[in-house]
Length: 453
Image 1 (cartoon, rainbow, N blue to C red):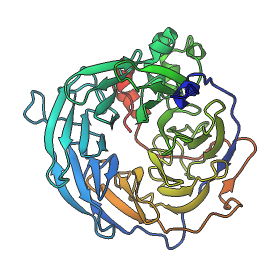
Image 2 (image 1 turned 30 degrees about the vertical axis):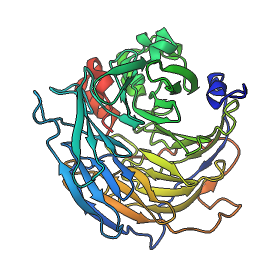
Image 3 (image 1 turned 90 degrees about the vertical axis):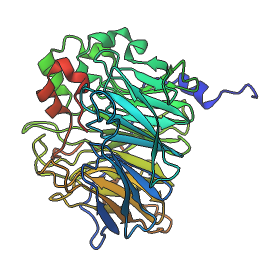
């Protein structure tokens, strides 16, 4: 070490800042652009890619899909009885899986404590024949998880500090960090507003999406001693002082806020925060993805907002087109928008994202995630199926062509507005699957288990 500040040292000094930037609008898609192929995977939710295979959460377990031939993807393994030998098993309500090298992390339930709350690890060095190598029961449920370098990162939502919980990947809990470590005032804030919804870990930094509480960066280079690096965005706990339970429930599914998903580019210079929201007949609507230029971590700048696709009914019971999960790879953004379809954008200039491809079929698909497979050739996206059905029996994994496009133009596409002030989310709709339903079904007493997507 030469004594100069490391990226993590600099991050520790970051504070929330007033950020300005541009926005990119939505498009219905390009004529003639169609999927390469698809395969039925009942119950499909999250999908992640490792090499020539995609791994999917399937509510009742997980599935492995061979995507070596993107025109003809095929299911090569299904396990729909994870931890069936445990009391309270098998594990259910499995909506998230993560893969890292030859290890797969499967966890559940996603929405509220069940008879069995646990995560399991599988050796997937042979993707067609995974072998369980570990399992841990926990006192909390598992809405979203992450796996990196042998460590399991869990969202330990307890309705209070909602900590990030780190395990060594087998049986030992190593460390925790939660909102109460940042400000004890969060203890008095109603649970729906501070759920730890999603986790992303890269190069010793955990990126945490805490819904209306904002987005935090935590140093996990020592997994036994997580420590706050910076709060990227979001209000202070005092902003919610005196808010009653009814107002909190309403606030939790309307914009602004609702930090749902966060990830960074390969070199951690571009960060995206996806918001998930709905609307009423009078206000609100779907949210998009905020892009932050963090090339200089001492001066993060909001570069642009990718606006959600349009919808004629922005209510929770309408057609969901709000942002869901996404990924950066090779200068591109791969994003899923429920019934709003999938979109591929060039983000080599974060201030002027350019939409390259889009596909949408709101009648029969509701996309959970889009993930790079072979950048410049194809990507994958998982659909829950017909949004009106809800059973997931027609859920599928799609592959989409990704031409190796020429260098981008210097002028944004017609769907892009670059520079200047933010463009507010369009007052249009997105039908979905998320916070409000769980709030109604579970009540505030179980609000830490409120998110269903």
